[in-house]
Length: 191
Image (cartoon, rainbow, N blue to C red):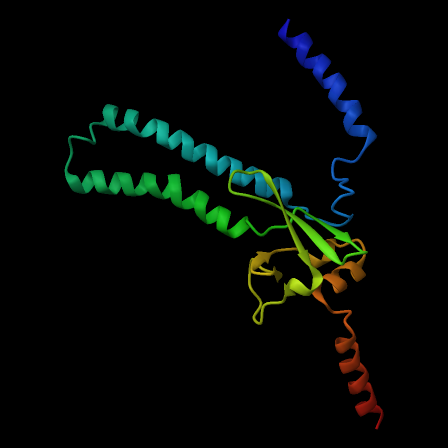
């Protein structure tokens, strides 16, 4: 029956996952970063979206049963406003705050390009490819932005890079001008 089909499907799916890492994408390069909040971000967004869909379907029923449609215009406006905030504003705000959260970051040494994987508005993974020279660091520290890739804001946690050199290269801290400045300071101190 139905249960047998599900278990046989799992039996097929599990070995195929164990043979290769689900995050291996040779076309993107080597994996240099993996965000530890990816599941939490996806979960919160999914919960918010499902709540919004539920609210949309329940609104006519609640109005019919509670008699709000018969009440004054002010009560109706307050009710629609409250439902509207939970239905539309919360998911949109969550998306704006989390759209730049990098789930995984790949690097191709030979072309010096990165591929950042983020979630789009419909909770699917989205790949953004950018060159190291496209990376701009914001002048002021921003809460949900570590750097800009061209114009897109990206959020990473520097401590989650297994190799700190990968983070330094991403941010451009390993560029010759940065080290020349440090060497200049050392020469000044020596004199």
